[in-house]
Image 1 (tube, one colour):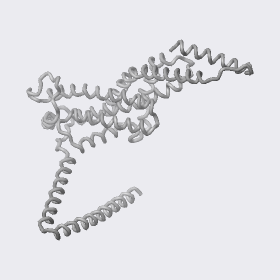
Image 2: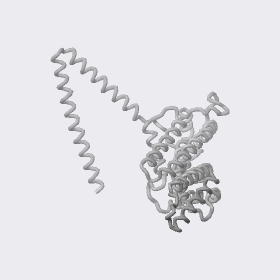
Image 3: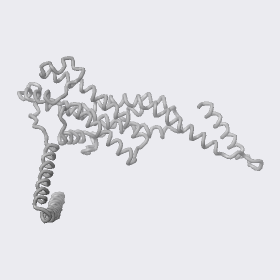
Image 4: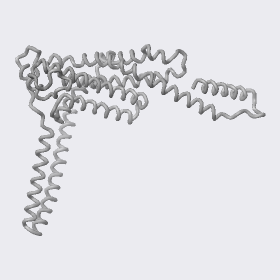
Length: 333
């Protein structure tokens, strides 16, 4: 079924391109004939200009979609192919401003590792910054098209910043290949039930951490609401941490061994980064929601009508409780 669908898709695409080519060619020839009837040189000028525009479009398309030739990734640090790969990487990686040897020193494997280590620190800062943003996006805009789109755009920007951080010249196909590799690292990209517990574990640990427990005292009626926000924010933030760390590990991998360990290494580092993000965001989110709930409660109490002379005992009790709650909330505020 899948093969038949692909054949139909390719056939329909070729037919559509053929029809488009015929229509455009007819319009082009008609315009050329009209201009040639006005003056022969006008038609020739139009033909030359069209050729230049088409050639320019073709050249720019080739440059845009071109991908630099890259030597094969060495199997390990002692592989004979390591020397060629190091020369390729040092030619493309920008020198970090804080590199102790600078750009004038001999750029060997030791220089490259030092430079990548410094770039790794910058990439982690970028990842943590976007993960913090996506925590609040996930908490307040969960299950909405706005939240999904915003998180996706933030992750794409993060990938681009990490990619441009590690390469002097930027290539579209190379960036797309990096995005594809990172996507395959994320949970649910290729559904495997045995991997889900490893991804869920750090989210649950952060959501039920001591910090969160201190913010949500037992018996609080808002606890389910808080937990829903925290879980959504933590999940979104974990995906962002995993995305940024995996992208950094892929662009910094210098051997096949390092590339094969990207997924496990990224999950391990993402769990620690998530704890830092949650520790920073949870108090802010808790205070924000508490103030909003308190304000909403006071506004609701202010709209209650005062009992009249003909009111019953039940209405008098409700009004008295409302006045008491209003006083308590204002004193706490």
